[in-house]
Amino acid sequence: MFNLAPVSVPDLTGRTVLVTGAGKGIGAELVRILYAKGARTYAGVYPVESAEALPDGVTQLELDVTSQSDVDAAIARITAESGRLDVLVNNAGVINPIGLLAEIVTDDLAPAFAVNVMGVHRMTVAALPLLRAAKGTVLNAGTGAATTAMEGWTAYCTTKAGLQMLTRMMALELGREGLRIFFLGIPPTDTAMQGKIRASGLNPISQIPQDKLVPTNVPASVMAHLCGPNPAMTDVLLDVRQEVFTKMMDLPA
Image (cartoon, rainbow, N blue to C red):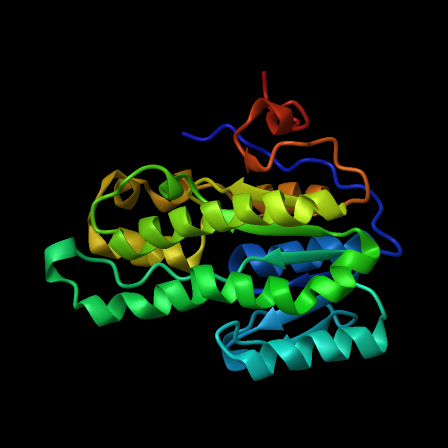
């Protein structure tokens, strides 16, 4: 279904990168790639007890992006230890609640907005002094659901659409200061989130067999590529499936 493969990642020695939502799935795989390529890597993990094993040299931070104190503590530690931040990867995201719009309690939408939109704003604003000094990069983990309505995904589609506009606002207001800003659409990938989607039985994405989903190393490699010092991309809105990335993939003929 998806003819995709990992892309090459440049040497990242000397780069300092913070990844939120790094405890599992794509975030954890991204952290492994960044560290293997020489980046000083900070992994924002929440909840800590459910995190996957990460390389010993990675600095794990307990980081709930809805908590201002967690965010401030993370940035303070990076400032004290590294003195710089080249890339912030806003990867933390939630899909719940999954369900038909008319059956969702309105207040149950709040956590998705708190993580997927407000959490990204909170992290980015807190990191701005370091990012400005480094002329750094903000990479927001996106999805096609930001522009395509999917049955049962009121929370996810709406908040990711909000994140896409937030990214465009970042590009408008921060891009002129020399920061690179990206929103990267990620295809259906073999993560725990996809398990929740399959269990719901709602919309075509839930019908994709697990063995047909994209491996986590594919989007993670594209994200790591964008963490490099000189990514060739200038567009703000990107997608893993775009030709600019598939041309880098070693795909079977």
